[in-house]
Image (cartoon, rainbow, N blue to C red; front, side, top):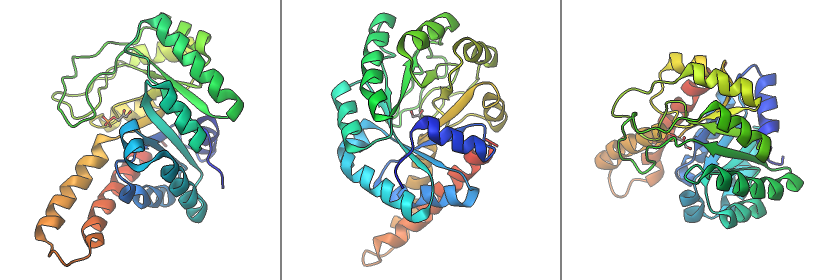
Length: 280
Ligand code: 13P
């Protein structure tokens, strides 16, 4: 089975009555079977996203081969997506390795430059049937475990979003509507009105970053308002590390390390299943 791009995987999700697809950050290769188990138990397709840090640590090729192999053996339609990348040559490496979707993150740039660079990536991706996610407005926060203030957000405006989508022709757009990456110091507050207006103005699938810490009610509502891709990263990492701390501390040095990882992976499966249930 070959990997699916975002548009294809979203279509399969919708055929199975999901309003959105979760895009889950894989933090290490050992976590991978836990993702597939969750997809099987929920009869959901799978979208796995990889940070550039993880891609460099594990190797783009290994990730493509491992994900493709499990997608086939477990019979789960799967999309492999490069998360937040502002380096076009790294995006090209991912494309050449066989990733089926990529994100160009130019949100730190002026609008014109963000549009120009995103267009370059879209032009590279189209002939290869690879989908492209762009980002507008700063979602903020951090993915390195530091707590962040939910107030530190630069919201996406409707006008900029409309122009960005028209001029770049991205497949999906990451919007800043109140969530942040990582652990919250306060509570996430999604601006639903803004979300609805951006969706109406752009007509493309929207992406909610910072899925960790969003309340179930907020999430259920967001997926009816144009959010078709929900990114979740920190929550799996927290659960995995938490379980490992416990099992590694209690285990003996001559126990198989595999035994320490199984409870951690079960916790990750649980997180994915709970998130996926919110997208119905
Ligand atoms: P969280 O780590 O806050 O869940 O966000 C993940 C994300 O948006 C990755 O792009």
